[in-house]
Length: 488
Length: 115
Image (cartoon, rainbow over all chains, first blue to last red; front, side, top):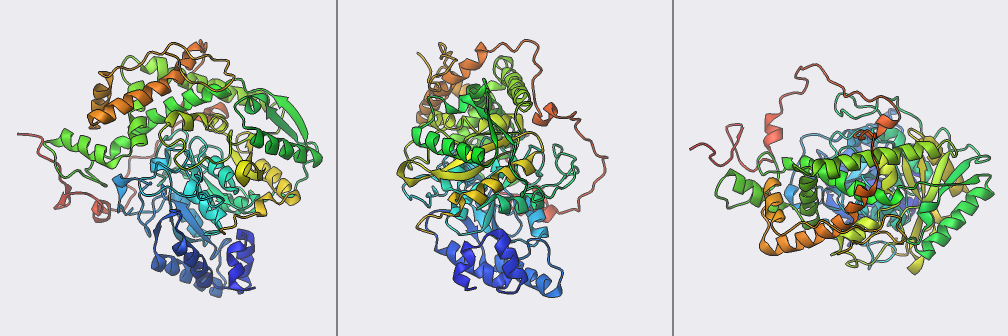
């Protein structure tokens, strides 16, 4: 096999290529690094050839010694909200420009523990707050399918890098849809596991009761390999880590779909869904039916309320989490100030971007005296009603399927000054986030402008294997996940 | 004034209770953010836009519903774990202070707070 084909190989194929010595880990890393270095779409925030090659040489030594781990030598890149020793970590913010973590996030060390080689750090919306990647303090990532469009967010760099074949896989994080929506917009496969499955240790916190890490790659088969490596209890370091055993998420991929009950929520197909996305998602549902699944009409009546509920709870948690950025222990500090409080205020004014400031303001307000019950507590009560609704419908169906987002990726700048328009576009990913359920996006076709459209699958708690099974069976019968942008 | 909502919404926008220009500096102070006058105006407009849809949640009857703080509490009992109060991490003072803006003799420096 020639090295020019390396970037078209899946994670599973690269494992074989490395094991059978068709290419060394250093050769594979160099091949991808050359592509990353040539990228001009703002996808990466940090590359360090020597750090990557040092990891690759260690993989080659293990491969030669016969002590290779399951994903030995396969490259990946991390969303820049995971702290890393080998690369700077900024979370897409000026606040952390030049920051070096003294430790690796658990997710980073678990993937390295399976032999994966890190190519660098991927661009994202500042502190993972955004749906377009335009809130990055460094650069707006361009969508590889159309450079005039956004890649989605907040894991926009992760999705764009996988779509453009700069990396076979990437980590992402999903608070309100930040893995699923960019996966949909860039035509890649991504999964957010059950809240608590993957450790949040070393993942810079945005909204702690919602944040969850997950993989993004080109297929469900690859996502299963990565998710198996990423997940596992971390009870000493993450107080919300679930105490459940590690799982081989590839084990059920080959199960047939015969008899599978697929719930189709009517609220996901209302007036706000663009006709091109509607058409693609309908065709995907027909495909699942043709493979033996049974479509079951269901209702999730509070779907629309997930928008205000999420945009109260997440900013409330963010306003608390981001209070650590005060110019004392790490990160930016203002140059001129009169006293300690003035130093805090100027440091935070200079270090944070507009959307982060806005969410801190909303969060501070809804938690403040006199408003806590009306907003924050009421939102948490509706959050329980939303979660209870899911349990009601999971009595009637095994998985839920629908659109990921109401439209395809929009144009850069189109909604940049309209935060509410961005919030509304999160409507279909927020319900599963609020309930803490696993959800994924897989390529299902193309809409307006030839842009990718994803199918969202939502499962009950700890049912990631079922989601990956459905996605894999769909991908065995379709080729949308194999199509790539011309630029790649 | 009416808010924007999702097309076909069963929850029509209510009359808003907009924040006023006086609220912004008060909240900004609580949040320890210095906002310039032009930023204050745009923040006020955008937050009030958002509160147009937030008012929808006040129309929902949540009598008798327990607030949900940890999503997986729906699936299983969640008790927050405590670990023994024993130092388990190695001392990495130097590494931990490497990214600090101002450090002297192993201490973080801040402006004088006691006269």
